[in-house]
Length: 165
Image 1 (cartoon, rainbow, N blue to C red):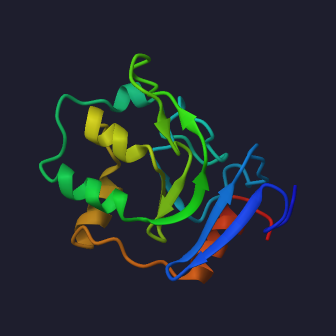
Image 2 (spheres, rainbow, N blue to C red):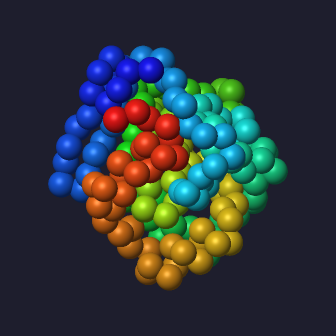
């Protein structure tokens, strides 16, 4: 696997930290079953899963309506710090007739939790349920995603996602 800044992995440094992008083929050496970050929305139908703990089937998480504060939760998800950007497109796994989505495997974090970019789509469209602990965390922060220091982003990238730097 190439180290950070080589091959398909390209670092981009911004004020809020490191944003990693790739141009092709994802390969990681993430430690299966060992994670310091708390993954959310890594449903079994979605790929790549980064070898993080799966949340189960997305079909089981679909609800007819969302949380009363769903719009605030969506804003929180939209404002996470980008840690991995994937230049890809993928289908809506619940509706094969829906248009493809871009950046489906891109990752965001608040320093404690990690989610895929497409989670916000599934929450908005299908009101997929999120873990109570995650919702309590968001509400305790008054729906304001905290800044994540670069050192924490590097820790997540190397220790949780297995990206060699």
